[in-house]
Length: 140
Image (cartoon, rainbow, N blue to C red):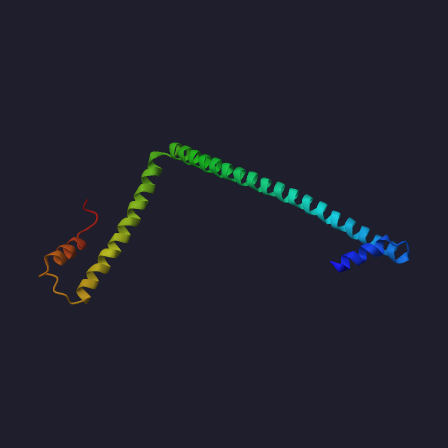
């Protein structure tokens, strides 16, 4: 507090030191006001940036929804224009893949049971599972 009082008294004097001190104080005040003005402008720009980001996210969500809707329409049109023979071939291909995978799993299961040397004939649940695993998949 005493420092500020002595500075105030020094400023009130009319000499070269007081003029230099006044210039320094005025310069400091100008810099402080410039900083405050720049901070205010920075806050306004940050606010605008966040608003633009929010609008961008909304536009991105809308465009994603429109693109997915467009893709579903294109898929439907593709399926409608595709001949029945090609559809059946695709379905048959999927079924064939599933049957191959099931056949491999059945063989693995049977080999595990046989390799474990468990008496699977005496256990009714295990016997049913082994017999079902041995059935041909082509007999629907």
